[in-house]
Length: 360
Image 1 (spheres, helix red, strand yellow):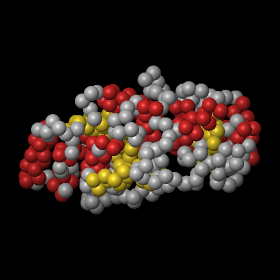
Image 2 (cartoon, rainbow, N blue to C red; image 1 turned 90 degrees about the horizontal axis):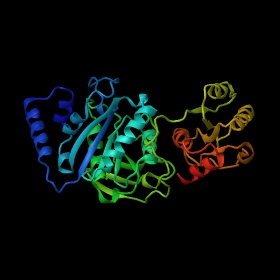
Image 3 (cartoon, helix red, strand yellow; image 1 turned 45 degrees about the horizontal axis):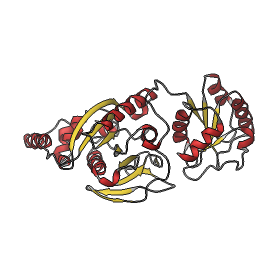
Image 4 (cartoon, helix red, strand yellow; image 1 turned 135 degrees about the horizontal axis):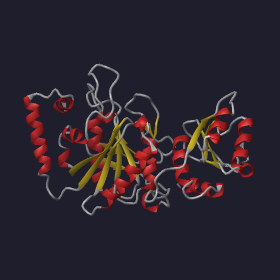
């Protein structure tokens, strides 16, 4: 692996460069019996570069071709192709890139010669992008999101192993029909459930409520139960005719909570508001009153929780029926925002939106 890391850092020895060339040659001559996997790259830490001993780095420094060449033996798993859809840090991920990525992914998945796709992405907003794709991609073929916690030039970069495992998962027959998956640190998670739980740890991605979909290690996979919620080909959402997504803001609840930010969101044209509430999605009386008034003006309000795990129950502590609110159930505030954006492309009726939160 050392030669792969040095190649990404631009420090490859002649022997390493020769090995790299041989790897590239093998990739081009991969046996036809291997499945065809397309890697769509968006940047992130997995393509980042920095000093070997430094903490900081620049995301999206390397292109998808560099990442593919840097992983030994990945060409033995599948016939690989790469495409650079974006090259940004995921803190800069936005609706425009989401729509571009989703439309391109649907096109690639629709190609008869493609058996699945892997999408490289920064970890900061990976849980949001993966859930968005989980709701709008229209294929049973495997889709695997992958990133890393350390840049490609780090002393012990985790990106190559994660990418290898992501490709392995995408080629596995049992990956079909599971929706969008996230692979990091030897675990496979559903995009619906996974969240980032630690700022820097390699074991940052977890699914607190339901656990992982499976484990993967050096390409060997053990699968667990499938998701029982609607997604991908069973989803009612589509990006085909979407040029933009409705504005939805997240408001964080806390002690001595002011309503100024809620009012600002309403004044700036938010079509939906997600509250990262305390406990079971609760908030101050002033906030409840203002949001109830906003509902009467057509704003859709979702109660989620700032707590890492648990279910926001409908009509528990807050009278959702009376106030016209939606309860997020298992979905955390970022994922609630994703689903609400798509729900608002269909309806502004809180009862219909609640049905969507129950089904997805």
